[in-house]
Amino acid sequence: MKYTTEIEINKPIDKVIALFDHPENMKKWMEGLQSFEHLSGTPGQPGGKSRLKFKMGKREMEMIETVTIRNLPHEFSGTYEAKNGFNIVKNKFVKISESKTKYITEHEFQFKGFMKFIAMLMPGMFKKQSLKYLRAFKKFAESQ
Image (cartoon, rainbow, N blue to C red; front, side, top):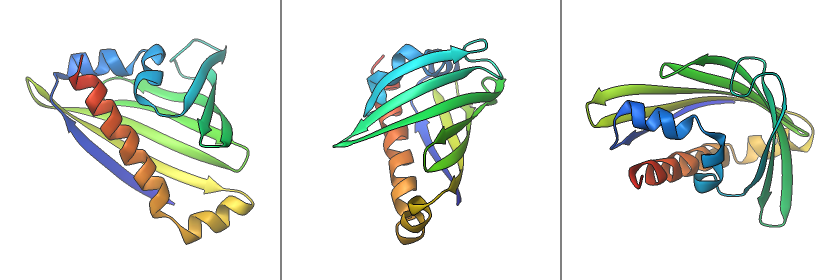
């Protein structure tokens, strides 16, 4: 399953990138994120690996992020591997004006086991969650 989401942020691109590029900020806008732990490689650089732990309601989820491309503001991409699937995410930032930035995410999911069934029944659920995170990042960025 592949899809793209985007949002406009009322902040200059350099400020948006500075906020995006600090993992400590993730808990401020990524609902459910319990921890972000660096595992290996250089943090935020290609090959760098980190563990993200989420709690969504009663469900807990863990995934391993591997940075694949770091060419900010043009692209920051990574893979996210969890027990039931694999996600490739490309984050892109485009300067619209001196005070406005477009944030674009491209997602490609590959599911295993029961998640294949869930994805077939409710594909919109994944895009909805991605949009929720974009809106939360926009709110966070514009409040800084």
